[in-house]
Amino acid sequence: MTSDLPVIGACLPVDALADYRDWLLEADRDIEVQSFFFAETLDNDWQPLAEETRRQLDGHKGRIGIHGPFWGFTIHSMDPAIRRVVEMRMMQGLDVCKAIGADQMVIHSPYTTWDHNNLDNIPGSRAKVIEFTHDTLDAVVKRAEDQGVTLVIENIMDINPAERRALADSFNSDRVKLSVDTGHAHYAHGSTGAPPVDYFIQDAGAQLEHVHLQDADGYADRHWSLGEGTILWDAVFRAIAELDHGPRLVLELRDKTRIPRSMAYLTERGLAR
Image (cartoon, rainbow, N blue to C red; front, side, top):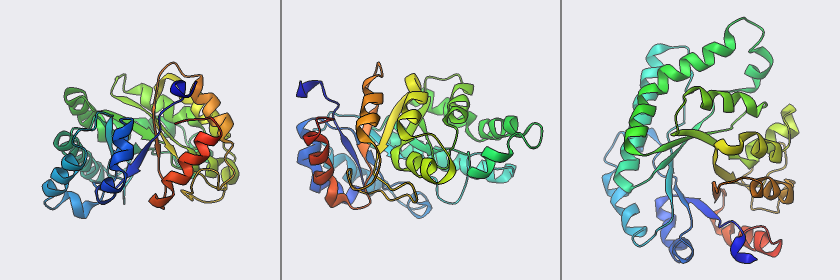
């Protein structure tokens, strides 16, 4: 039945919320606000932007999240001074969550293509990634727990999804979960030998709380409309259907005007609504 299909939401900057407000409210679709990850925004007066977000989402009863800060750093920096800067940025992200009523924040995985081939090259390297990430995020996770915000770790260059899952598990917190970006996984599959996208979904399993839906060609991070690339969407949605819970499924397209095209693709195939 159509009503049994997962409901799709979207990633949108604040200035695009008005364009999709009716669509978001009609089914209380999940929304990921993507206007608060720039340092220039966080270091200046972002309160008016937060107020506009609340105004645009007035009456919306779906789940609200944000994409947290990520430009220019990694969460597992070897430099302790940089780790303090990253901690501060994440705290600013939690400030935004509190201001707009968001209960989820996307953060980026630390694992790189280089890591995949070198974590076992020097003894202790794998443990160092976890140690440095904890030094960056332990206080952030504690605040997220107190605030009721879940941090979801998104795959970026990850080749082995189990590494990211082990990192999330190491926090032993209900407020640290996983995100899968379909285009990133497909890039890693096509270019660096990672498994296909549905394997990333399966590996995340009960830890999966968030999915960025975007199509790609396995070569670059395209953020194309669904159906334009080569991701096997039937397999992806079969893997999602096997889950015992409903992660947030949000379209993350470079061209926001193609959201209706992606929705048409999904509905025509009977994959989502």
